[in-house]
Length: 206
View 1 (cartoon, helix red, strand yellow):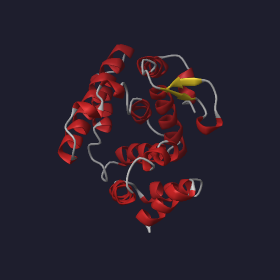
View 2: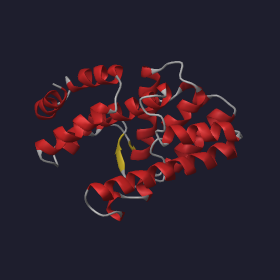
View 3: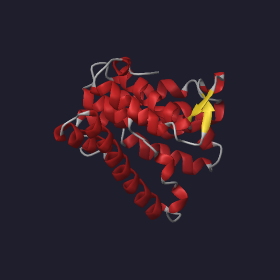
View 4: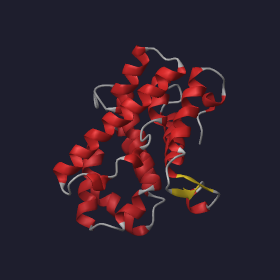
């Protein structure tokens, strides 16, 4: 699930290691191999690894900035829980805006410490804030990867906690943000979901 380039020396490997070190502070734990079990690991570390894995599936030749952004997509996210903002859509949007800023700033500090210049830091910042979605291919690929990680590893549990109509609405709003390639991958993933969640995806995408 790791980015093979992260095992090398240099600033890329140092940055990936630093991102993982921050994410290792996540108090939430989950099995390393999901339903297959494995040693419990910090959820944020696993999320970063899954983002890297999906990015490499979607874009094997992804530029370094995009690889860095994928690993830092939800860096230290647990520090700003949803409960710190009001319930409802306005509170949710304010929370998401704050998270994007927080992720970009946290990643930027790590990249600067690893030796990256301001141009790279700025580019990763734009990617994490999803600036240019639907216009910038790299932003689109990052968004697709995030949606696919959610569908593959979090959606079934999420769907079990909310009414079907709400889930279908969320899926439709998510689908609008995805590329045709991302939607095709989502349809393939849905085939492996339990009956209930799979039916919700079919309803949303049909």
